[in-house]
Every structure is written in structure tokens, then in C-alpha cells.
Amino acid sequence: MKTAMTAGVLGSLLWTIACGGGDQTGERDRATMGTPVVTLPAGSGSSAGAGGSSVGAAGRSSAVAGAIATQPPPPPPAGAPAPIGVAGRPGTGAAGAPGMMTGVAGAPPPAAGAGAPPPATGDRSPEGVCSRWKVDRADISEGTWSGDVASCNNGDISANGRANALKLVNLYRWLADLPPVTSDPTMDKQAQACALMQRANNMLSHTPPSTWTCYNMEGATAAGRCNISTGPGVASVDGYMVDPGNPTTIGHRRWILSNTFGPTGLGSTDKHSCMMTFGKMKVGKAWQAWPAPGSIPLQAMQGGFGQKVDSTGWTVQSDTINLANAQVSVMADGMAMPVTVTQLGAGYGSKYALRFNPMGWSTTAGKTYSVSVTGGAMPISYMVQIVDCK
Image (cartoon, rainbow, N blue to C red; front, side, top):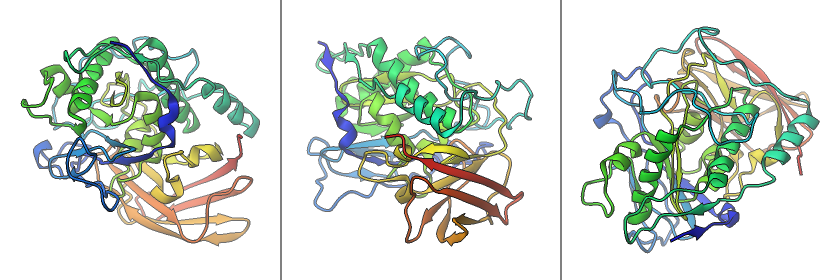
């Protein structure tokens, strides 16, 4: 049975749970990692079919009716093998689309230039950024799923659906000046098995029990290594970057912007999808931020899921710079822009991270925001120019 999908889900609110809680060096056993809990709207039910509850301790949540729910994976324990897949294998994305880096979580970050891929290239002027944004988003169709829940057939997502999801991942990585990632056919297969299991049970889990409908070991293993979502693959990328529902981790976004992300595997059904996040590449970038330095489309801050990045938080992450005591100041037009600062859980795509949320102001096109992070192991300063790419 083939199921055609549209991008209409983009108008839904995305809810997320970030799994993890161990640090990037794998010092905590995976079994002990905590899971932040999704906050559900008042009146939501508790049955999986009706779209109700979240169970944070189990790392699992059923879908809110009319919403997308997602979970990013925790880092593996120290010494865990890398997921199956050949690093650097050609992906299905359009030529030149930017992407994500791979690397085994728990390995120390490489030094810059130590086998790291070259930096992302392209016209980074406001006009060039808007051109790239529009071109890469001209086709965001979800493709067609060839599987079936009734027969527990994983099927596959059509090539255009997988290519469009990868294209958006690489668009965000390009904006963050990170090199692109590819998708690996073996990892795609694993992610597809994961997606069917989440779809068949209408809930999300990184550790699905063997009692699950359509349970299979390949999908269960992949679930522990994936961002997982109750939305189809393409729509979920934007949601991962806004990342509502994970105020203590912002885990989905951090995995996508990780030094150690890629190659990836992408699996999708008509509703649920999985994105492999553990990889082998080594970027060695000292820190990453979202929104990133340089020109950033206003539309990238808005998400289309009922929340904006201003609500979920701007983020700074690093594998090497301890941000535990850091404070953030933001200036625009010569005026201080007040923010609240929150430390984020370790190990979700980076060892250290924080988020900061605007207080009484909103990101505005045409403004340039000067960000300074002080009080950490090393000061970080950058400027974000917001451009309207309508």
C-alpha cells in the first residue's frame, strides 16, 4: 500500500522530548539517563490512540492530537560501536546541499583541521542566503511511503521524500557554517524500520519493548540512535530546529548542529519518521550557535509549529568550552536586549550547551544582534543579521 503525503503538517504544533542526560564523554551509563517530559495541553487524554500522555522516565510519548511529537536520541555509553553504515557514502540530497557531521558520541572532539571536512561554502550575503533558502525549500513534498502497518511491512519512503528531508537538514547546517552530511543506504534501512515501529504503535520510544506491534530488532536498535517524530520526515526537520517541548535540552537541534552528526539515515512513513544522529565524521568546530552568526532568514526563526525560536530559545553549544557559569548579553541598535539564560543537559549532540530567551522583545528582520557569552571557559562573541526571505 502506498501512501502519499503532503507538507500540510507544517502548520501543526511540534512537541518534543529529548532523551539523554549523560555527558558527551559517556561517563554516565545510558540506562541512568533522564528524559525531560513533554508538557501536554490541558485536556489531552492518556490513551495512545486518542493522542494523550507523555512518560518521560520511559523516554516515550504518545502523540498529541493534531500535533507532532519528537524525541532525539541519547548519546551511547562509552565504547559503544558506531552505527552500521559507511562514512561518506553518497546521499540522495541535491548536489551542493549542506549537511551534518558524523562521529561516535563519547569520543573526544577532534582538533580543527584533523581530518575535518572543509567548511561550508556559498554566497553568505543576505541576498545569497535568501536565494539558498528559497531554492532549497521550493520542493518540500514528503514523498510516498510504500509500507503498511497491517502487514508490518517497513516499505520505504520514495527518493524525493528522503532527498527533501536531507536537503533541509543540510540547509540548516549550511546556515550554521557546518559541512553537509550524506545519507547512507544501510542507515536509511535501519531508520525506516524504526519509523514503522513508531507508526504502528502511535507513540515514540528510544527503547521500544518487544511487545510492540511490528517489533523488530533492527528498528529497536535504530530507535536508540535516532531523532524520532510523529510527523513525516521533511516536516520534522523544521520542528527539530525549533524544538519545542525540550526546554532542558533542545536536543534535536543540538544533534543536527553537532560536530559528530553524519552520515545519517532517514526513514519515514505517512506520519512517523526517524533520523539517525550518531555518526563518524569529525568537524572539530569550537562552538555552534542557533541562530548562527551571519545572515539568518527570519523564516528560520518562526518554524511554523505554533512556537518560534524566541520561545524555545537561542542556543550555544560546544564540545570543548565549558559553559556552566556562562552569562549572555545581547545588543541591538546600541541597546541592551534582556534575556534569560538556562543551562542545558549534557550529551545531546554536544558536551556543553545553554539557551537564552528574549525578555520583552522579538527577533525582527532588518536588525543585527550582537551576542556575547562570558563567564565560561572562553568568551564567545558573534553577530546575527536577521533577513526577511519572504
